[in-house]
Length: 343
Image 1 (tube, rainbow, N blue to C red):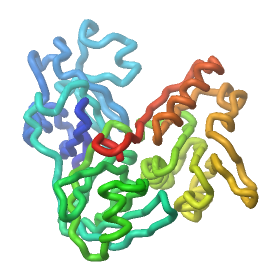
Image 2 (cartoon, rainbow, N blue to C red):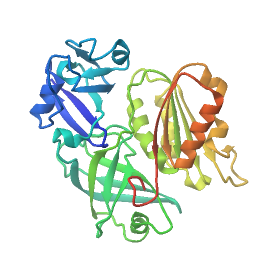
Image 3 (cartoon, rainbow, N blue to C red):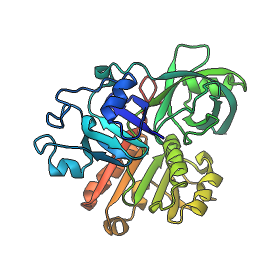
């Protein structure tokens, strides 16, 4: 049997290919219409260089002038020499257009439910089962959704992992007067058609090698739900801390689902934080960075993932700089206002 491999490019587009046993990654990509840049095919020129971000692979030969020992330690690879040994994801630091990779999938879905959680938050459920194959995406990636009866598209992170029935979920921030927000409040009905384009984005779960710290602001939680779904299926998942910040306690989403992860992930801790807490709120209040534990984070290397509004992300990054923590990697995605990629 072959392996499912995601090829992610600098323009945020991802294409999934099937790689046969003992087949070179470059050959598999070309066979399926993705012409990765190449020159020598001998492991010397490094034209087809990429980086493995998750999965197991081997390389036949890599010249020392093509990739250094440090490059190899950072899981950089040459597609012309790489043979994958499991499902995997690779990143290439150039646009997909260079490879004539074509367009990402555009799929018609049906609305199955919309939950208006609060004045600022909604959960949209879509059925993409008309697409007969399993819709592939990496946990943390997003889709573009076309608002029915308009030419407008908005982007939202998947709030679930890929599944056999192609049932999809998105957490959506409701703006006072947004195109998607007005649709969800006023016109959205079960059974309506809604087109999506996917998968997109370079914010996704990398190879898990050390403890994880997830920091979500508002509907930025959406990306982490897919990641947690994925981690919950892994036999030896690392410790995971989730910090989830919202404006008021009414904005908290998927609480029963978040608490349930503790039953599947033995080292999972969840920290909801409310900025403008009511008198009845008995949990953490204020801003996320005020509740991060420097001593705990300094104990060992960790990977931190940030997803949410730019002020939250910048505040956490500033806090990290001020603490002079050393051994960590950080991945982030900012949610921006309308007419941008994230809304």
